[in-house]
Image 1 (cartoon, rainbow over the protein chains, first blue to last red):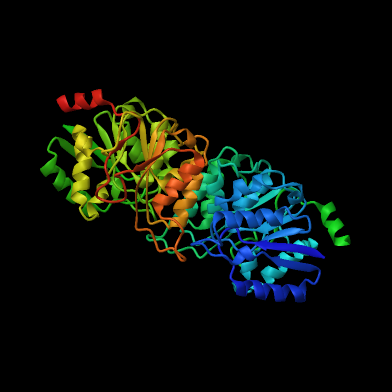
Image 2 (image 1 turned 180 degrees about the vertical axis):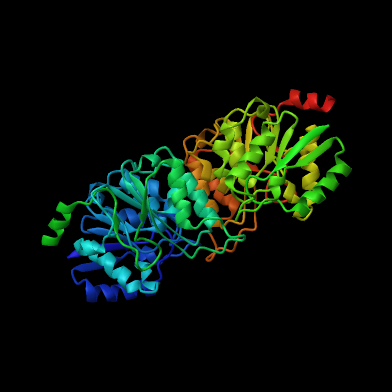
Amino acid sequence: MTRIAVVAPGSRLPEASAEIVRALAARVAPEVELVFHPQCYLSHGHFAGTDSERADAFVEVANDPSIDAVWFGRGGYGSCRIAQSAIERLGPAARSKAYMGYSDMGMLMAGLYRRGFGEVAHGPLVNDIVRGGGETAVERALAWLGRRDPSALEPGLDDRPTAAFNIATLSALLGTALQPDLAGHVLLLEEVSEHHYRIDRSLFHITSQPAVRAVAGLRLGRCTLVPDNDPAFALNEEEIARDWCERSGVAWLGRADIGHDAGNKVVPFGRRAAGRRDKIAEA
Amino acid sequence: MTRIAVVAPGSRLPEASAEIVRALAARVAPEVELVFHPQCYLSHGHFAGTDSERADAFVEVANDPSIDAVWFGRGGYGSCRIAQSAIERLGPAARSKAYMGYSDMGMLMAGLYRRGFGEVAHGPLVNDIVRGGGETAVERALAWLGRRDPSALEPGLDDRPTAAFNIATLSALLGTALQPDLAGHVLLLEEVSEHHYRIDRSLFHITSQPAVRAVAGLRLGRCTLVPDNDPAFALNEEEIARDWCERSGVAWLGRADIGHDAGNKVVPFGRRAAGRRDKIAEA
């Protein structure tokens, strides 16, 4: 049995989403026990509870040795407000579990990976159940969290270390105490609901960092729900990414199968630990 | 006679704005000659011409010894695409003139200030003429560019060095070759058309930088046209700024009289050069 705790360090997880995912998990992943922390349903303005409530819940489940994985309930916004102080409170039990989410959760995941946490993965959130085809996203998340099913993985991963981020989220953590060392990594990026000019500005920012220029290369996931630019921007998102790669000397490695959608594949940070995956599959 | 060249390193300046400002300048600032570079009116997607066209025009007027000041025509977006390479092409004549603008122009202005250019000022753009009360903004810009009129200055400036930026613009240049040394500076920030959660995220980013934490303090200008947050954010923009100041150890120095509006006062970067101001007034 894999015990997976759900917390929401950013925006609130609707109870209805939790209920649907609980029922789905019982059907498709009987090896998994989902534990929804009541913090998920708190409300404080934009957030799922105050900074203290969100931080405490995350620290509680991360430090709980009976929990095998922390699955983030929803993105939205807010994890940067608690990430650094929460990570400082984590003990040894927090290091032996997996963490999965994306979008705003990239703040926390970056900070965990920076501190050497071995199983941080960019992948679906609980609330992806509300997307079109959301069941497949949730099943994929459970397949990776419960049994490290390789079919959940982004298909282009290779033996190089990897990291994946939402573009605006990565941009906003550069230079902070959350920024991980990405040297030698294949960096996968995705975006949602940003104008092309904002994608361009963020990729200027990201690819202009000396530390980011040490990556092995960049792959661009999907950029969805791009608002109309008036006038139309001169480049589309792939042209923007290729342009900044060329200017910065970062290798352009093509597209990636990640994004703010149900098709979002799992990208474990760092090198994939084949041994650990086998161990879990056998257990 | 002060010769002021207008270029548009980001978005296009409408000819109509130029015509109105030309007529206004003839009436209120006869000591000024405005030279609108034809690049202002070019169009290439989002931009006032291609990257090359915008960079070439800026370099041309900056390097022209017969020009006393470069006044940016409009913000929008695009100066980060040309700033670094353009600045590398500047010669000695570029150092003895003033530069004024704000918003997206902060990218170029940051890079100029980083390289020791002595008269970079955050202040109105030509196209501010289209705002309600825009004539006062343009008259203020001309008063500073033409005669360093102290009444154009932000009223809270003191003897400490100063810099002013749009929040999203500063966030996107941190860690790049455009980032100036802000140690000991009073940092004035303003924002427009950003959700509170984005202001919060950007101020997390800005105040989390070790280099930014060396500022003398932060003053918050106006944050206008904030889109509705759904649900309402927990803090307003002043509470957000005070919160990040407290968390980061940056001194909160109150509000500032800058913003994306006609009231936007002039903030020269660095220490105000009283001697130089007097010299110009006497000339």
